[in-house]
Image (tube, rainbow, N blue to C red; front, side):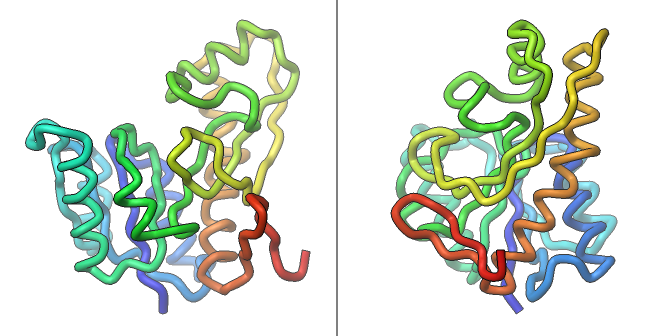
Amino acid sequence: MLKIAVLVSGGGTNLQALIDAEKRGEVGNGKISLVLSSKEGVYALERAEKNGIPSKVLSRKDYSSISDYSKAIADVLVEEKIDLVVLAGFLTIIDEQVYQKFPNRIINVHPALIPSFCGKGYYGLKVHEAALAKGVKLSGATVHIVTPECDAGPIILQKAVEVKQGDTPETLQRRIMEEAEWQLLPKAVRLFCDGKITVKDDRVYIKGE
């Protein structure tokens, strides 16, 4: 059974999607073994407690540099013998110390169809504000391998979601969560935990697909 750590910074809606999927037996050979938060008092920690999942807070403000903070995170993940790291609304910058310890073993969900509306500055509602400002007819979500370059790692899964007339950033965000993020992230975790993902030449190959 592979040990999964979910890194969070807020409410934990994607964490909840993973918890629910695990309860339904949909994360394959994996188990959520740790929730690690960059902030005290966020609702994601309450979700972890309600579901009996060990949690830990490493607050960014307690560390003088990104390097020191990244080392602390890497040390915890190694100490806990984590196999897969899932960034689920984790909004704190980490450096190569974490990526080097977990090469091709960190995944992230982004609320757009990469390479659109991604990279530095594109997070939360800002992604959906940009999509609506551009007038796109389709947006969606992407699950990708995390690399040092923001939102540039190999893509595992994507799903398109219709942008409707009259959408606000909030309504579009909710629809993309419900129709794409909450479906793609558990599926990507299952594929990883069942050994079906291979990364070669900056591309993801999925066995059987």
